Length: 160
View 1: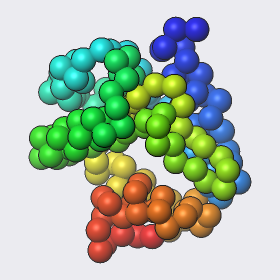
View 2: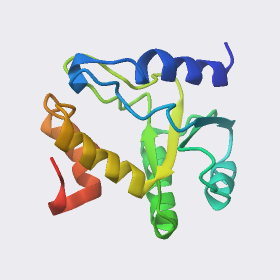
View 3: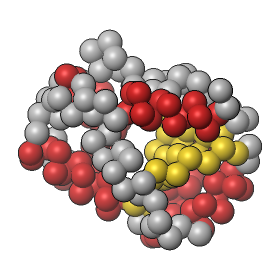
View 4: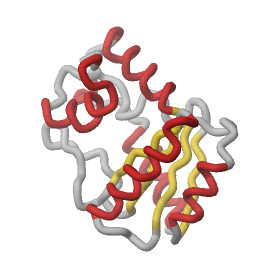
């Protein structure tokens, strides 16, 4: 299976399946609904080109980095890109095999590739608020996961 097929399979079999850990919703309730583009690459330059040319034709772009940067480097890359593209309302989230999130024994991380997930920050934040108000999505999350995934974006105004 090639990397694009593997990432697509992970999205279909893990990310879009309802889970009790997420109040009966999928890990990402909005995955595939507005379109996900999967890009395979070996350079951060290719990732920057995607960000520079962002046109909202896809809700999410999943960039699988084949050179597998270390955990520290991957998070530094994401932090740098987030500072650079914040004014364009874009956010880069990271899924790294060396730091999988865990929810009561369930690990939704892909486990193989270093992924950079690019989305509109405003859409991610709107979805977070909607999920916090209308479902039990965050009820079983650990405080550590809430801090890492949600509160880091909202600060004192976090909806959870």
